[in-house]
Length: 472
Image 1: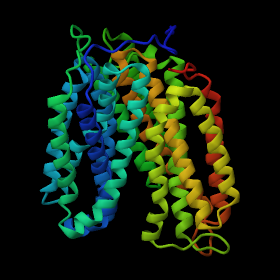
Image 2 (image 1 turned 30 degrees about the vertical axis):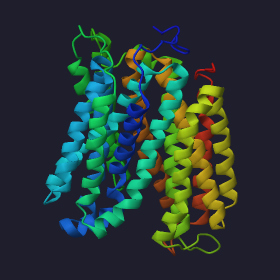
Image 3 (image 1 turned 45 degrees about the vertical axis):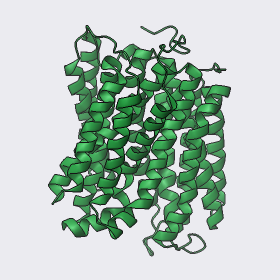
Image 4 (image 1 turned 90 degrees about the horizontal axis):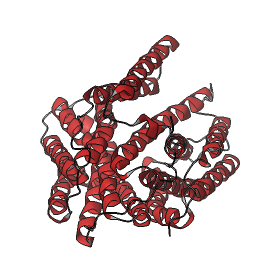
């Protein structure tokens, strides 16, 4: 059974209550602080290893815990936001995140820090909840722009987190890399609570599909853990097959439960709508391509091979990668405007074609730093445009009551695509290692760029299912 007019969906007018500039400003600051909190751990990981007395594998659990928790919480938060109202669920979520930030900032050891990071992982659910609020208070065209701005600020927060982690940890102490953004989150949450209008809940008389919640959570946990295990390498094929079977069995059980539920957590008919499933496929492809580039380009900066590679230091690599981060933020800011003017399909098609061209070019030209910097920055800008287009298209293609769950699933799918792309990139480089030097050969990088180009090109086959109309 299919949903007839899901793509395009009828435009639902927002309620009479409007979001004022201070309220939307507080929502943006909240997104900025959450993005900061998400990335402060990465540059401070060596320091955390020394301060907590743990090895690299144990320290890696900090980032993994955040990732897994986010994958579980995002769809649940989105569904609860659809049911009870985005503001109400967002405030509860921020209480959990704030508690996790406080606990992480005073953690005396790794186990306590992991508990704090588990609570902080709930931050991923803030994005779909923010989309619910703007969808209910803005017109369709304004929603597309607002989604781009919120996404851009979350990305900008990631840049800030990378930049301030070192100065905070070395100038004060490692505790402040969690405490400083948490203070901003608490302040912004208080402002949102005061100024953001309450959005009416929906489906108040229906029961929560707890079996569906449990099975979806179990499926996502198995999938994320499986990807992380496989990413670590050294996993025999039989074990990989077992992971695939477990994930498939859990997913099948979830689908069976959802088909029989009176009020399912995820309306399966919504997932079969072209506007939704095509956005999901494209999200996986773009996230995978971005993760592959994030692996190849820094590695080319680092290695020093015969006629390729630049042999740069970690500090220099960080500086050369900064333009790509800035480009990603700018893309989110203008992406919503582009979707509003030209439509999601046009933006995604142009972006996919441009990505293929960029990747083919960098496969041929990667001898100097400026070539790699420009290629990575252009790819980040185009990828940001496509991501914003997919979020905006999905948010306005489904019924308003399904905005949270639909966009949260895209957020989770993006995480999955990033992990899969990073693993694929690592495998390509490992397969192309020079037996003498132990470094990836130049041909491995060329192959990697062309594989990423192929993934981007294949994504064009599903672009045509996106929404076509342009919002004035």
